[in-house]
Length: 355
Image (tube, rainbow, N blue to C red; front, side):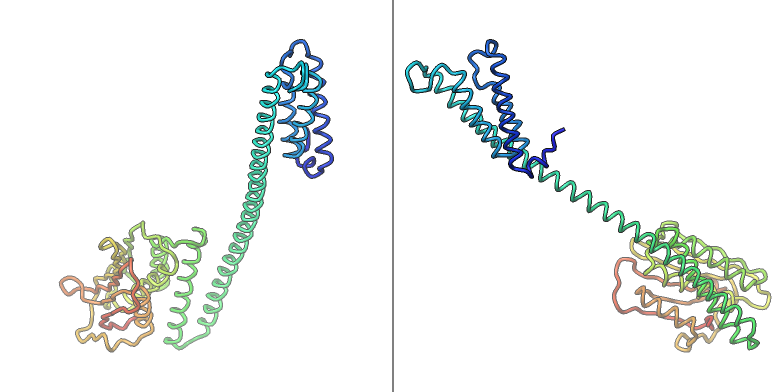
C-alpha cells in the first residue's frame, strides 16, 4: 500500500507521483481512444482525485494542469479559439477547469479534515492509554496502602493486648480493653472500605459485626443484642465513621451499665430513615433504666465526650431517656442527612457512659 503520510512529508516524491499518475491516465486514454472518442478528459479526473489524495493540493493542481494540457493537445481537434476548433471544445475545456479545480479543493479539504481527525483519535487513544495506566497504578498503590493499614491496625491491637495482660489495675485494664475495641472498630470499617473499592461503608454489615464483637468480648450472661439496620444505609466514610463510633459507645454503655444483678435482657440497635432526609440511630435496652437523679450536665466520661463530638460532626441531636413504661433506656441520635450546619445540640442525661 502507498504510504500517504510518507509521501506528504516528502514533497518532491509527491509531485513525482503526480506526474507518473497523469502519464498513466493519458496513456490509458490513448489505449482506449476509439472507445472514449469525444471524452478527452475522462481519465484525467480519477488521476486528479488520486494525486490530491496522495500529495495534497499542490500535486493535485499539477495533475489537473498537466493532464488538461496533455488531453487538450492530444485529443482535441484544434486549439480553442483557433481555426478548426469548435465552440464545444472551449466549453469542454472550461468545464474541465471548473470541475477539476473543484475536485482538487474538495479532496484536499476532506483529506485535511480526515488527517486532523486521525491525529485527534491518535491523541485520544494515547491519552486514554495513559489514563488507564495511571488508574492501574493508583489501584496498585491504594491496594498496598489498604494492606499496610490493615496490618498496622492488627499490630496495634496485638500490642495493646500484650500490654493489657501485664496490667493488674482494673481501671487501666478496662481502658486498654476499650481502646482495643475502638481500634478493632476502625479495622472493621477499613475492611468494609476495601471490599467496596474504598468508596462506601455498608453500615448493616459493619454494625452487625461490631455488636457481635462487643458481645463476644464482654460475654454478658443472658444478654442478647440484635441489629435492625436499613440495608440502603451505604455511606461514605466521612459520614459513616462518626455514626459507627456513636453506635459503639452506646452499645458498650448498655452492656456495662444497662442491666442489674441478674444480667439478663435485650439490646436492640436500629438505624432507620425517619423521614425523607432524617436519620435515626437508636440503642434500646430493657434493663434497669436510668438512675432517678440522672443529670446530663454531670456526664464527663470519655464515652459521653465521644458521643457529643460525633453528634456535633453529624449536626445531630442526642438524647438519653427512659424506655417504655419506665423500663430500660432509649439512647437516640437524630440528624438531618441533607444539611450540615456548624452548630449542633445535645441533651444527655448521664448514666455512667463507658469510658
